[in-house]
Image 1 (cartoon, helix red, strand yellow):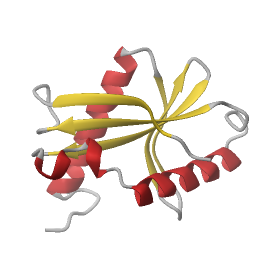
Image 2: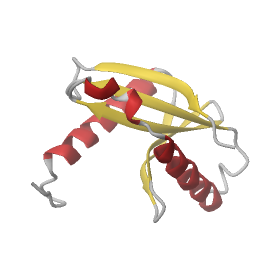
Image 3: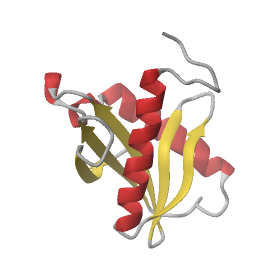
Image 4: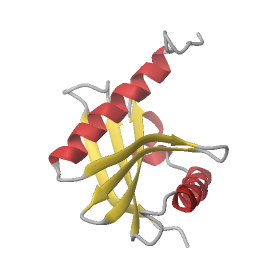
Length: 129
């Protein structure tokens, strides 16, 4: 079933809920959400945060079940490359962050994106050279 802007698909609604849950969690850990859902022709970044001057690029992955390794294992090499290219585009467009240290984090949410979900935060989950 496909969604519209007024009525998102169940998958899109779950993704948005997962991103909200992750943003609340990161804020509780002292990070400031700078941008949500940065999109360009290259790709999308779920959350861009400030961690005391470090720009943190956050990929949020939610899986209803832990089959096939769960949420964290769904960040493939191709996905990491797309995130890195999208980050480069963001940095070109953002003078404020152009010279900042950049860190790539992943938040995995296993289960429905609610207070019962198991959330795993992997800081500095991968590097891009």
